[in-house]
Length: 237
Image (tube, rainbow, N blue to C red; front, side, top):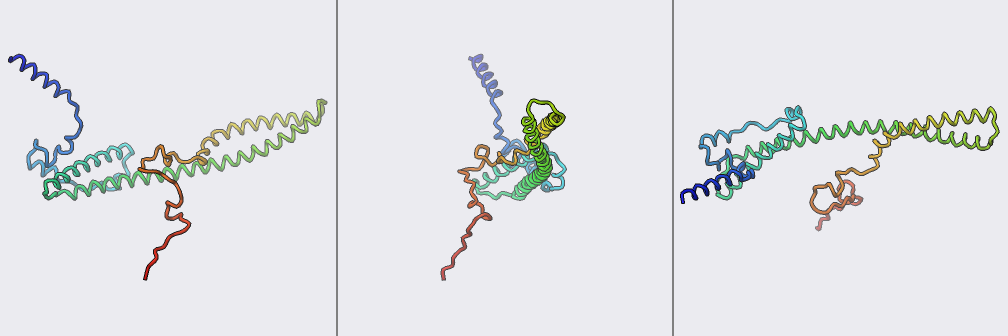
């Protein structure tokens, strides 16, 4: 009987060691609901500093801001869990300032990332504009070169099989134009690929990659500034 109890206790211990950690204990670990720490430690953990200033956030990389965002998100969920428990028990919750600081830090992180993205988009737009101007110049050269090739090819066909000085000059010029045309096509291939996205819609606004709830109807009537007719309130006197 004793051996059976020992085997059952060992099996229970092994099962408890193999139980996965879901992370739910992080909602009360180190807070007011944690029974493993004393009240003095709870008061010490409740002391917080100032929110993250935007000056320091601008100096961090995207990976550091990504980690800091999830640290703030974890702290925010921790504080919201304590606030919910205080509402359930109908007691006064004293950490509204901490929650406000965490939300302000998260807002500043989003502001820094948004401004970085705007700056990157501006630099990218300048680069695409320079490539577009270069492409337009090369496309103009290609058009004039193709027109000249058509004229020379017509002259060579009109001259016939007989060999003359003019026909030889036309043929050599046509071969030179063909070489220049092939080189222009090689130079235009990367420019066309880089500037082709000006004609395609942004993938972030497509229905497949959008995280907005409900149906998305991209009509100008939905935008206040683009409405053709603005309805004004009518006062009934």
